[in-house]
Length: 382
Image 1 (spheres, rainbow, N blue to C red):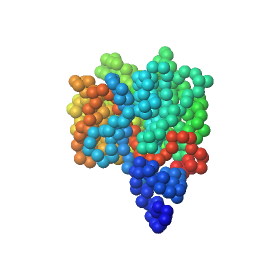
Image 2 (image 1 turned 120 degrees about the vertical axis):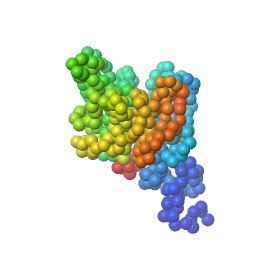
Image 3 (image 1 turned 60 degrees about the horizontal axis):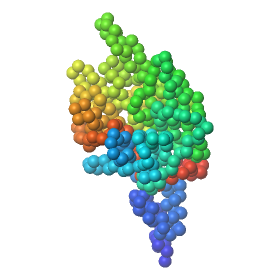
Image 4 (image 1 turned 135 degrees about the vertical axis):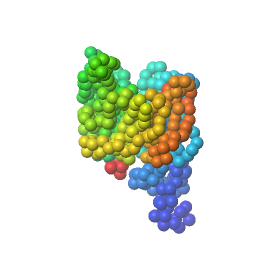
């Protein structure tokens, strides 16, 4: 009797949907019936939506050869688990940075002594694929990136932005990689007067890429001219039609904010963390931008917090706890903390002496392939 032939189809499906990826990879060889089920686009989509979310810390190191990522489990109290880059990508690596994560696919930027590589990586299936950069597009020095799933087109896109600044102007040019066609193209950039991009990671939310951009303004306090104020706006890239725009009005920003701002995703909305440094109060506000992009709403306030000018909100774990990166000027390395707004308590998750920075991305274990999908397969994620 064939394996599982005595069980109803619905029961087999519901049972398999609750299993981790590694078990499903083994069960593909049980019989052709199970192989067809597990590799079907409908099953892959449903399984992906059922898996618990993790938070990914993609890291860059000062010393050693342990370039890779650290995975913080969704409900675990243990320290993040480090995973090295695939061995084929470890030759002469000098820098590694996470670009984004969507439906179980990670997009990672790796720089070695000779060139720059971009690759897709599925941690669960242990598959990866280089995204070959066409020489005809010339030399691009990446300033910031974006990677994500675009619901309107049921596709994945990678955005690479290069900048050249002169006379106080920021001139951007950009490249877009599309997974379904396995192709690159140049898109028209944007020029911003007396501005510069934030050094922090950008975020892709529902097919829209966002990053902070700062412009300098005069700062006169009690008749005295001080250092210019850094006033933020948000640079936006629509991954559906490949067009840049800006969000300049209504941002939750004032003189007390400094530059400790960061963009995140919260329940499929764009979120901004604002660290306020006042004379007696040091607190972190979390704001979300409504889908119409006309109104910011204060989600909650994290207090009390210590006076630490380098505290940066990186993202959320399970849409509940806030992941905070705090660079210690005494210890010279980052301290990773979790803050629970419901209890107003924080806990140290880990300290990393050899990491320059953390990038936090939501991650879910999945069977999604790193190869270009057919249009019919991609429609399942729309």
